[in-house]
Image (cartoon, rainbow, N blue to C red):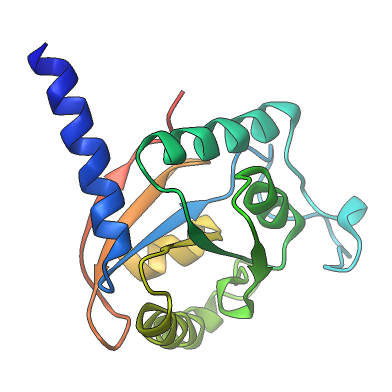
Length: 179
């Protein structure tokens, strides 16, 4: 019985933190086998990019179900413009999701990391002021999360980040992808 109470306390804790204005959930897209994208890929054509596998699509659906079981009923979901992130965001099955340019990968040009991170911090600062009690879920890439939080994470893993008013990370908790 104690274990069940502990699970419910953790579930409510995640939802409660994400309802506040100082927490955001960053998520790496689910499984898309390989590294980087093929030469000559374009964002306008998913067939030219590295995409989610069947396992990756199932992972995204499972994560969306898990988030709702944690008490997250409403969320503003934003995605990188890459198809593997957009597909992950859609498969979470919250009411709506949108593309956000500050979540775009800079894997092809790591010199963009500082500017990209500043743009992401600015986006987070604005969204945390206006999201109300909805969770803010950002689906992005390994390089973006590493630059923002300093954490290497696997496909589908999440980082619950506490942020300040400028959108900068204050602390974080790693949340492994639920199975």
